Amino acid sequence: MDVQELLRFANGLVFTKTGKHLDDLQEAVVRGTWQGKRYSEISKEVHCTERHVRNVASKLWQILSKILEEDINKSNFSSAMERYQISKISNFGDFNFVQNKGNINVCTETLHHPKTSQNSPPTQTSNEDDTQQKPRLDLRDAPDISSFYDRTSELATLQQWIVHDRSRLVAILGLSGIGKTNLALHLLSQIQHQFEYVIWRSLGTSPSLHNTLKSLLKFLSNPPETELPTSTDELLSLLIDKLRSHRCLIILDDVQTILSSGQIAGNYRPEYENYSTLFKRIGETCHNSCLIVNSWEPPREIGVHLTLASMPKKG
Image (cartoon, rainbow, N blue to C red; front, side, top):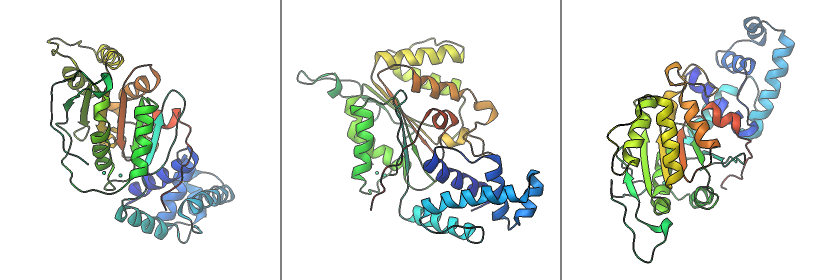
């Protein structure tokens, strides 16, 4: 684990516990401690007193002690973080779920997969209602994952939020390699019949918002619209109209690729700032659809607009 990975990891732990990202001074404490620096050296770098740095560090160690369930201090911080990260990856452990339904939001932990036919046309039998029709699927970006890990309670939580509570925005957060995509794929097999359209898109190649919106709209337009608006704002407005008129499920995977790797507060890379408008509009506008975001960390709109409450861990 390098220092940037450590900062992201520590930030995710603190965010899950407190609903707040690490501030600049807490960042400096984490970075300096990892680099083996004394508090006096850290205080010179951040231009404040050593006493203040010690107080901030002490509060940070207390928060991490509660999360890691062991006494964390400056001397054992680095080894404890590495040990905790390895244990969580090997056990497919701590996911964070974040839900946005208006202003009601929750956070917890998580995992799973299916195989479904792609680009199936919408059909409906005479005995089925609107929510039981066969959805039109576009899973071209979805990977084929066959491993299975029993996360019944977590899947039930997500189904409750998306199907019953009609949440508009849900984030599945966690470190790379712990199974966020696997979980979303298995969830998809259980709830896809509740939607008219299901779309999986990966942001792994860092597409612009303009291109992402065009890709979504081409699939949601039936028959496909030959001419789409040229401006990104108009494309976004048209997408919201589609989300209102149809029950759609959109999964955006690998969202961390549009976030700044040099910062830990969910900030965007400069050329992807307009994605913030997408998340804000979908989270705050009334419509019939749901967006699932898979990421190592939440984009700042999700963090800013949500009040997080911890849910019990699996025993």
